[in-house]
Image (cartoon, rainbow, N blue to C red; front, side):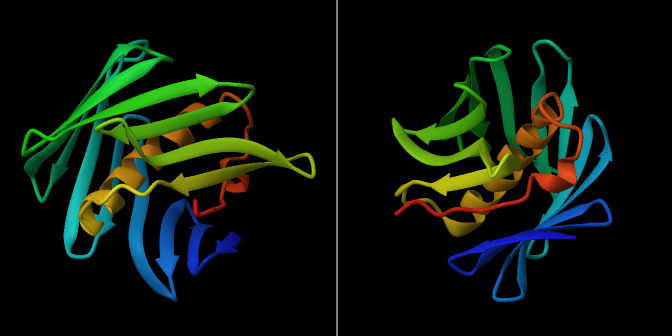
Length: 171
């Protein structure tokens, strides 16, 4: 089990499950069922994230078996667009400068950013949240999707995904 705690939020990895906790309450629980299928739980809602394709993947997320969002890449490694069930749109930006970074933007404002950083020569996942005013459940769902994307790509940088747990809150 690996822990890194900041401002009462903690990502925990244990036995293949990943969870985001606040004051011992689990906000998100993620399970990787297959390379292309992940399941995450927020409250009483069960989400399933399914990836199709490899070089130019698309993702579909359902909530309790109902469409929640779709994500399509313009070209792998650059940008993607997310469209929600209510037609809200988000942009996903990838960069490698010098390590992996994934940002989600809404109306040109950063919602969150996941970055691979090295502290004391150890790879760490750093998460920053912007000042976007989104529903808490939507923010958590986007955080889960971004974590799934990040974890899949980060394996190209390091082999021990268990070492990629950390959280930092933007001020």
